[in-house]
Every structure is written in structure tokens, then in C-alpha cells.
Length: 333
Ligand code: ACO
Image 1 (cartoon, rainbow, N blue to C red):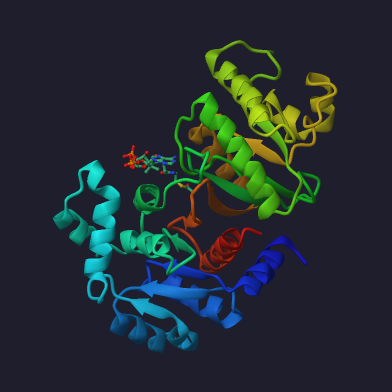
Image 2: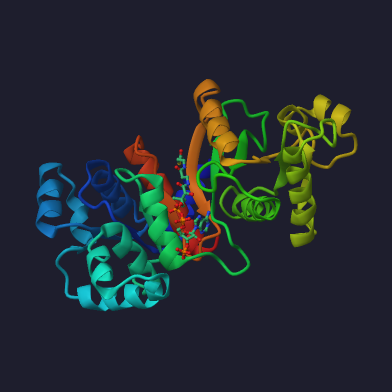
């Protein structure tokens, strides 16, 4: 069974409830129909129920009737969620009046449904920018204990099976935190290793990437990565991690042995941690386009409940896969 099939099979076992705030959007509705048909998750769709029913009918999406539909602008819990949001954000200066407006925003309502225990996770971003999906998640669901920074990993499925473990690698942070400190980068490495085990089902070998391998260049940017490597080892002493190292030293055995002899990671890394978001985002897109890799994600990590963000260019299949991954994260498998 390939990785995506096994992720879908796991999702099916757990019956988690995922909220889709963009419930009237075409790809989302088509994906929802597949998710319900395959039993990957229970769904809450946010949007006007008449509009959803009409679109489902027009497009022949028979399973949509099995989803719970909540209209953010017209539901009997508007006051309840307004109070909830006000309580969570009043110390940040949010007024009750502002909260009453925000709860009608599907991206806010989605995270409030998670906070209230109605849903186990959320997938959005087919029509909303990353920042708009993430902000309510950061404000309402917040991070896991011991984690201060959310980041985004991509599971990269390469055409050439020689890379990573049978062609599968994990890249992070490619989606969220523009310029992490050394401490934050260490956290990103540790949570990415967890994602690698939980979702990609691989034993992580983490390379902390830079433009230098073990002191070959001197610069404060290199120092940051070297410090992050040391901190990550302190956070998780069992973790197979090494750095700083260049990308070729990380993935090409001969170069790894030459530049970092004896390293347990150099030349055989299956997890690449990038020093900044700029590098991570550019790198994953280049590998996706130039090497024809399938980029699954971003899988957001470090949040207290799984919330995942789609690219606005996503396909129906991308949404189905990300919902399955979110259900896996919610089940903690
Ligand atoms: N992890 C956890 N919490 C965070 C993080 C983070 N990485 N970043 C911000 N926060 C929290 C803040 O602490 C703050 O919480 P508080 O209000 O309770 O104090 C809240 O989120 C809002 O913080 P701001 O500083 O106002 O954050 P802002 O909204 O300006 O930016 C954002 C956050 C939207 C994630 C920003 O960092 C961003 O735009 N990142 C880039 C996202 C992006 O465009 N990615 C590339 C595209 S994705 C792709 O190609 C797959």
C-alpha cells in the first residue's frame, strides 16, 4: 500500500470530525462528497445550507446530505460562540461587538467549533490566504504545550525512489514562520521529526540545512543553524539529527561522507529542515516542479489541534488527502 493509501486507510478507522469552512466552494464540495463516500471523516460544512444543497444537487454530489451544515451568519449558537471568542480574546483588546462580527467569519467559526469539541480538526485555504487561515487558529486553538511556534511540513513523494526512504522525504518549515530564531528552529526540527514518524511512518534522520557544512563557512546565519542543532539534541536526545550541513551533504552519500565523515545523517537524510521560510518555500516548490515530486501538505505542526491550510491552486484530490492527514493527526497516529 502506498503512503497516501495508508493515510486514507488510517483515517477511515478513526471516524474523526473535520470542519471545512469553505463549504460552498466547488473543489471543497466535490472533495467532501468523496470523503463522505469513502468514510474518511465526518464533516461539518460551513455555509448557507440552501446554497450547499443546490450546488450538491447541480453537481450530483449525493453524499453531501450526510454532512452537518452550519451557517456562520444564521445559527442558534451565535451568542454562545460570541461569548466564547470574547472570553478567549478580551485580554488582547477584543470587544464583544467585534467578537459578534468575527464569529460570522467561517474561518473563526471553524476554530471555535474545534475549541468547543464539536470538531477534531479543520482544513481550509482553497479560497483564503494562508495568513487568514492561520490567524484564528493561532488566536483560538493555540500551540501544543512546550511549543511556541507553528510550522508547516511537506511530505515530498519523489519520482526517484533513491531519495529519503523509498522516495519519501519531509521538508519544513515551508509554510508558516518567516524567520525563526535558533530556539524556534530547534522546535521546528523536533516537531517535524514527530510528523515524520506519525504521518510519513518513517524513522527521521534530520538534516539542519545551511550554506555551510560543519563550519566550512563562518556567518551568523550558519551559527544560528549550528545552535539550533545543539538545542534540538537537548530537546530530544534520541533524535538522529545533524548540522549545520549543505543540501548535497545531506542527501548524497559520497558528499556527506566527504564533508561530514561519521555523521549518522549526512548522505542519508530523510528530513530537511530549512533555516528560513524563504528557503523552505522556494525549495519545496522547485523540487515539486523540477523533479516532478508530489508535495503533500503543508501539514501544520505544533498546533493544539490539527488545522491544515490548502494552496489556492489545490485540486479536489489535494483536499481529500489533506483531510485524511488531518484526521490522522487528530487520531494521533
Ligand atoms: N506559531 C504560533 N503562533 C504564532 C505564529 C506561529 N508561527 N505566528 C504568529 N503567531 C501568533 C502570535 O503570537 C499572535 O498571537 P496573540 O494574538 O494571541 O498574541 C497571533 O498569532 C497573531 O500574531 P501576528 O504577529 O499578528 O501574526 P501575523 O498575523 O502578522 O502573522 C502569519 C502570522 C500570518 C502566519 C505570518 O507569519 C505569515 O503570513 N506567514 C507566512 C505565511 C505564508 O504566506 N506562507 C507561504 C504560503 S504557504 C504555501 O506556499 C504552501
